[in-house]
Length: 263
Image 1 (tube, rainbow, N blue to C red):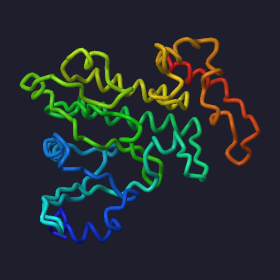
Image 2 (cartoon, rainbow, N blue to C red; image 1 turned 90 degrees about the vertical axis):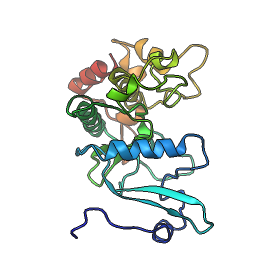
Image 3 (cartoon, helix red, strand yellow; image 1 turned 30 degrees about the vertical axis):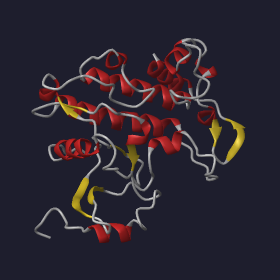
């Protein structure tokens, strides 16, 4: 109890994760280019931060697996309700009904922006996340959002010292300036957050198959403002989860909030 970090071996992790089942964890492949650098970046970032809306690290493991290969893992607090991505986009193989109402989505949006505010404005050296997206936003038992995955994170003091070659982030969420070789910045995280807001309101991800021929999630949303918002709002927000065919109109004050979020 005196040691804040528990000691966990490779064998113990193998057992409790059912042989590293994909259903139980996100695997970091050390054979993948940049994997070790990503692991070290996440360790460096996580040891300097603490906030209720950031994923809490329990311990880490740097060991050897049963085949003699190097093994590294970060062990985080378990998030019972999975990722925001799981809730916004139901897997075709998952028949369980998941529904986030408007207030829940609004609370999640507040949780995420609180985490960004902490990273950008309340640390001695600000941190840029660089890969904010729904799959990196995890929900606990109380549906409180926690931002995770700091493998691409950068301290702002390091930005000027590193090369900006290569686009960092996930397709659909990368800030335009990053695609043109721009340096990592807090504005890039804010752009990511804006895309997530659009995704939460419309229910469509930036890589949805409908977005082609110069049509993007941003243009899709902008074209319906301000009079035609109802045409692009996620239909789930208009339905009662127990009666999926029954339409429930969003209260006017909530619609005003939706419109403001899209703008």
